[in-house]
Amino acid sequence: MNIILCGVGGNGVVLTTRIIAEAALKEDLEVRVGEVHGLAMRGGTVVSHLRVGPDAKGVLIPQGSGDILLAFEPLEALRQLPLLKRGAKVILNNEPFIGVDAHLGLSDYPEICDIIGVIRETQDLVDVDATHLAMEAGSVVMTNVVMLGALAASGELPIRREALIEAIKARVPGLMVEKNIKAFESGETAFERWMSLKCSRDGS
Image 1: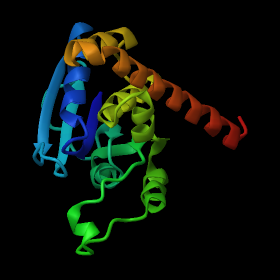
Image 2: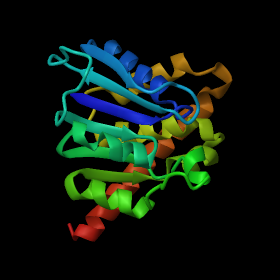
Image 3: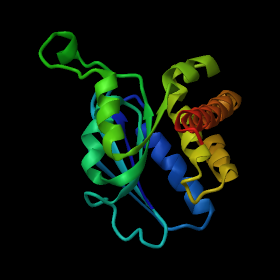
Image 4: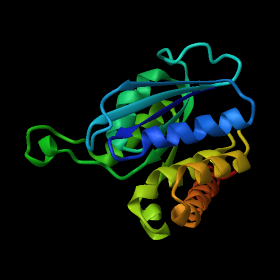
């Protein structure tokens, strides 16, 4: 399985990658990790490649081979589409990070609805209000854990929920464990709600 995680510095892309990798190791799965773009500075592009399972022979995911995109920022999701198979699962945090250049009028940030429209043309999109849910759980810094909960609820990962929870507990400060578990559960609920609405729209 080929998973791409993307966002900007401060989104928790690297931490989330490590949580998934550690959970996969607990499940005795083969894991390869590559961080291929950007710097983990606030506002800079950050992309991680995570390969899980017996086919995880290299750290970089070839174009057109990604099974899942966990995108913490909409424009960064758009930039990673060439890495995905057609019909790949895209779990998207719909809150944009508007950089300094866009604020100053030196570059344009596309409309969120346009970004979502482009992704939907070829991929299986799940749109999550992860930033808002993280704030409800106690802190915006837990947006990544909300996203991880949504990914867990998708059933796409070959990793048990319990292994992910244990990896979260091992990575976050003790005083924040309860809030992070709440954030994880809110992500699970958000994914389930999305699927319920999708079924209603599709009439199934």
